[in-house]
Image 1 (cartoon, rainbow, N blue to C red):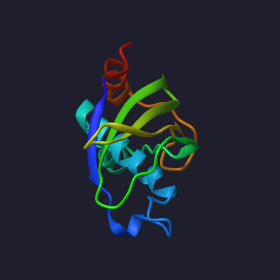
Image 2 (image 1 turned 30 degrees about the vertical axis):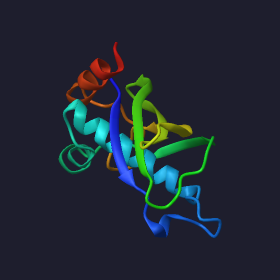
Image 3 (image 1 turned 90 degrees about the vertical axis):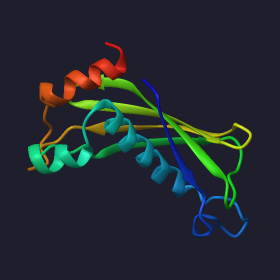
Length: 136
């Protein structure tokens, strides 16, 4: 399963060279990740508030190919790359939607922790739809 989310580049996201500042890609990764979870059938907020599970970022990787600029419509493609009960890795591809120019690719790795920030396993309520989306 691949989720497609869209954002428009805001002026405040650009740097002195008039291209999107690199840290904004990590924010776009989050947009893609949260929307993928919604598509799967649950909200990240639900995991936190109802069940006390969190997915802190353990690692981020991003490789830039082409710059994004102010007012570009950005397409974020997100999928699950690795899935274990205590770890989830998401993979992202970022495109300029107008011409489908490949702008960046990346990954984030997340550990599952409970409300006391101890490593934990996700319950079946979340693992089953995640496994289905992962194709396993």
